[in-house]
Amino acid sequence: MDLESLISSHRGSLIALISTWGASPRDAVELAQDTFSEAYLSRDRYKGEWDDLKALGAWLLGIANNLFHAGQRAGSGGGRLISMPEVPVADRPEDTEAQEREERVRGVQQALLQLKATERTVLLMRYTEGSSLAVIGSLLGLGERAVEGRLRRARAALKEQLEKNMLLEERS
Image (cartoon, rainbow, N blue to C red; front, side, top):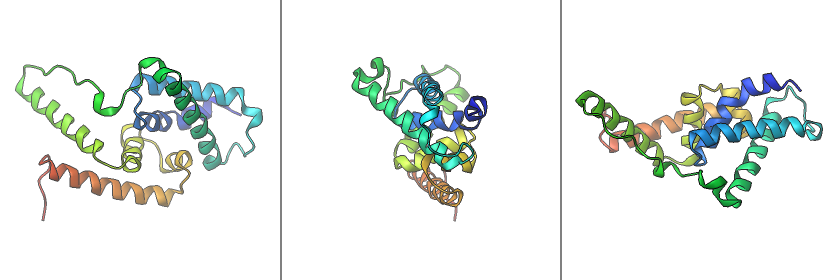
C-alpha cells in the first residue's frame, strides 16, 4: 500500500463527500485524515487489489462512514459537526460590490441545499475539490459514465434552482 498515492488520489474527493454529510470544512479534513490513518492501520484486512479504484474507494468510504457515525454517537463529534444550513455566514462587508458577491454566494449555497444529496455530492466533489470522474466513481461505487450522468442531472437541477431563486436568468 502506497499511502502517499492513496491520499493524493482520494483526499479531495473524500473531504468533499464528508462535507456533504454535514461536517464543517475543518471536521471534514480531520475525518479524512482519520480515515487514511485507519486505512493504513487496517491495510492487512483489505481484501481487494490496491489498483482497483472502485474497491479501494468503497473501502475508504466505509471507513469514513463508520468514523463519522461513531463521532455522532459520541456526542456529535465533540459538538463540532453541524449541518450546512447552520453554517454561520460571515458579517457583510460595507462595500456594495462585496455585498452583492456575498449575496450571490449565499444564493448558490441555498440552491445547493435544495438539491438532492446525491446531486449535491457529485457537484461538490467535482467542482470544489476538482476530483476526477474515476475517483468520484470509486468513492460512490459508480462507473465513470454513471458519474457523468449524475453530474449532468445535478447541473440541470442546480440551474433550475438558480432560475427559480432568480439568481440566473432563464434562457430560451
